[in-house]
Structures are given as structure tokens and as C-alpha cells.
Length: 478
Image (cartoon, rainbow, N blue to C red; front, side, top):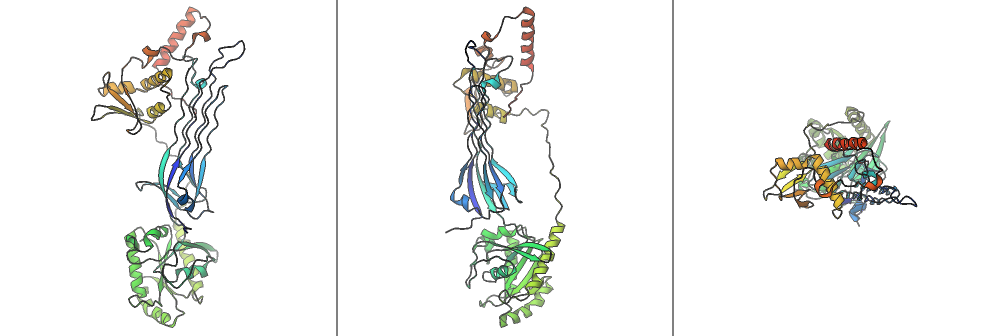
């Protein structure tokens, strides 16, 4: 049965925003009390958060589909819908989030570090929030926006200070078991270690973590053995320890050739050339092992390696090795740049950025892309003429109609808003003010209005013209 998983594909879905409510307040002796439809609640986010108590991605291997809850719709009486609950997914320290193409989206290191993998949809505005001086009685509300759907890949890269690398059965598991309190599986056959093991070592005042990486063999960087699956766990380590077997029973192997082969695999994998190395000649409790260690030690030291002769079984040479590793770890920690205060980078939009694009495609279709127009389309109830006219006015004030004219669009041409797989397509009819001739002044009900003096009517008319000429204000509190 699988107990350790360090790579999974996860399908996450954020919650949908709740729909706004179109409602009119009614009570005795006050039949037209005005719009009182509440706003819809926002959908819940899907958030990945580092949890130190989690060490594997096993839960997501068995249940790869995760979804946050939806926002509730608004109700009459100015009652807003309840927000959807965020779904927080705990992940191990050192988890890398990638998209399906392999691009890194986030690198989660440190307890509490979080990343929003899928953002919940915003709730739709109710007709009470849509009311204004010009639109006193909206007969429509905005729909909630669907939440994000994402397919992501989670990769675990072990966060440790020291990595033990070497051939299978070189004694790495035995070494970590005597240096720390870790209890890995130990046996006298290759590939005993099938998952990385972590141990905590205390040497003087220095406390560091040590990782036992499953055995490497020639061709590991190309997928042979278990090496390719677990070489990623070496990437975050500050120090590499070559554990060489001086008592191997294989006639075609010796410590020097083992070192050369493992180094070749590390170079092939890439990104590890700057890590300090230590060589450990293990199993010197065996007579032949002690003799071989003394023979190869001068050759290894001439290459610039610090060499330690140890025996994990007999507990020989372990104290010197432990303090030498603590010294290297301390130097690596001191060399790391100090964390700076969080910086907020502000990137103002260009003065000529309209927030959308209009492109004429080969088939003659004009496609409009942009965050605002695409969201507005998703929020529109196309069964409600007033809502459609409101959308037309929004697009017109954003400048979409003007850009279509510049792009060469004519009456009756097809216009699509959104991506190819989820677009709204319609035949374009240019107007002076989009939808105004067709539906008049939407949302106005003269039953709400008392008779006004002529001077007041003139001032109101002028205010309407001034408001129509201003840039469209996309104020939405959710």
C-alpha cells in the first residue's frame, strides 16, 4: 500500500458567486417602497497552506478533486447572501505548485506560507445596489461569477540541510538511524529505502536536518531505478554527503568509481554544482573495508574532498562527522541573505490601456477580450431585456463600440466576447448610446417621482447628460 507520495495532479474548483436578487420592497400603504434586493455572496477560495505536521501528498493522491463551497444568493429586504467557505488544503513544507505545462506557480517554503490555487467568483449585485439617481427601480440583478477551475501539479522537494546520496545498500539508512532518532527500514538487499527519510541531528548548539535519499544507480537522471523520482529531494539541501561502501561484494565496484558515477548523475540532473561535498567511507568495521578505506582516502583527498571513515554499525567516527556537518550547515545558513521586509510592487496601468482588446479573426468575427467585458457578460441574465440593455450601456461606456468601429466592424457583423470555448456571440448593431433607443431609460419608474418644478427638471436633465458623458464607473464592492 502506498504510504508516501511526492507528486500529484490536483483538480481544484473554487466556489461560484451567488446571484444578486431583484426585489421591490412592499408593505401596507407603501406598495412601491423601492428596490431592496440583496447582493450574492462570494464563492470560497481554494488555498494551499504549508503545515509542518503534513509530510506527504498521499491524501491528494487518493482524492485529487477538491471544491470550495458556493456563495448563497441574495434575498429581498436587503439581505446579502452568505459567502462561500474557503477550502484550505494543508501541504508539506517544500511543496512546489506547477501548471500542466510545468511552469512554477508558487514555491511554498515555511510554516503558514499559502497560495490561492483557485479564486472564488464574486457575488452578483442585487437591484438595490444597482439603483442610482438615473436608475431608481432596476428590474434586474447581476448573476454571480463562476469560480476558477484549475488543474495543478504538486511536487514535494524535501526541506533538509544535509542529503545522504550513494548507491543502494551503501549504509545511508543505517547512518541516519545512528545520527538521529529516525527509524528507516534497514535490510541487506538493494532499494530498501523507497521513500526519503528525514532525521534531526544535534551537534553542540547546532540543530540540523538530514535526509536519506533512495539509492542512485547509473542512469538515475534518465529514470533508471528510483533516482529520477527522488533526485528532486536533493535540490534544497545545503550539503551533500557521498556515502561510499568500502565492503561491497560486487567485484566491478569500488568507492572511487561509485563516487564518479554518482557525481555524473548529479551533474546530469543539474543545479547542484555549488553544494559543498563530504565523503563518508562507511563499513570500516569490516576488515577488508578498513583496508580499502585507507587505500582510497589519499586519492579522494587529492580531489579536494574531506573524507571521514565511519561505521554506522559499530558507531565509529560519527561524532567527528556530525560536528563537521554542523559546521558546514552553519556556514551555509550564515551565507544566505537575510529576509527583507515584504515589499509591495505597484504597477500602474498605462494611460492608454483600455482594459480590453478587439481582434478581427480570419473568419471575419470580431473577438473582444478583457477581464471586465468577459466578467460583465457572465453576470448578465440574457432572459431579461433590461439586464441586456444594462450590459450594452456598460460596454459602450467602456469604449467597446468605438473600438469595434475602428476595427472596421459594420452593422450585422458577428462579435464574440470571451475565449473561443466560452464566448457570447451576437450580431452587432451600432447605436449612439448602446440600447438606449431600444429600451429607453432603463430602471426608471415615474411612480416614484413627485411632480417637479420646471427649473428642477432642467437641472436633472443637465445632470443626466453630464453623468452620461463621464467615464463609466465600475464600482462593485464584492
